Amino acid sequence: MKSFLSALIFTTGTFFLIPGATSQEQPGCFMVSPNGEIVDLNNVCQGQQVELEASPNSSSNQNAQSGVYEIPIQRRKGRVPVVEVTFNGNQTFEMLFDTGASGILISEQVAQELGVEPEGTAIVETASDREAEFQTGRVDSVEAGGLKRENIRVAIGNRIDLGLLGQSFFGDFDVTIREDVVVLRERD
Image (cartoon, rainbow, N blue to C red; front, side, top):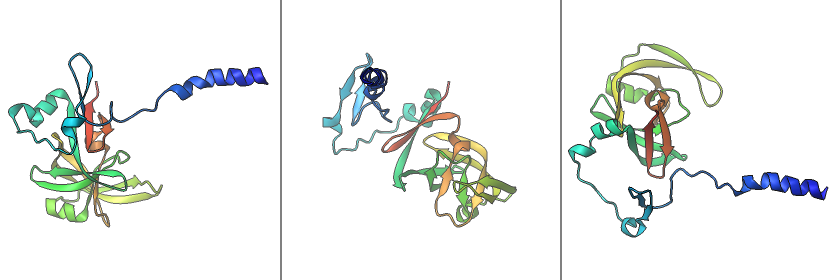
């Protein structure tokens, strides 16, 4: 029995030595130097918000070239990030960044403000494991963090206060949710 326990501890012990995964490489404020060294910037960042001037190199074109987009988190609702989403290039609304949603769901009020014309219906299985029927329509564009999708289908929900930004917007990206930003990285 003793040898069995020793073997069990030896073979399973290595699993307990592996640290858990984190959503950020290092806690706090830091940068990685060109040679890969981590430089601690907590003494510079603590209690300060640094605002950078916009330049031609920091535009959404640079995001498109690098394949990395950052969507600022405005707040959280039930631990789910709330982000600002711009529709049709000029109307911005808060939405839940929902990794479990397959599409984009907007409220009836937002649909009216955007002038979305219902095109049909969709039957969707919800988190409560029941099927729900939604009207669908199209918007000219949806943009968040510099990532823009055009002529995209949306579902229109009644009795919702915040819409859902789902997979039809970011499904071809790897998603990292940090404390204050959602990072989308284009897949190779």
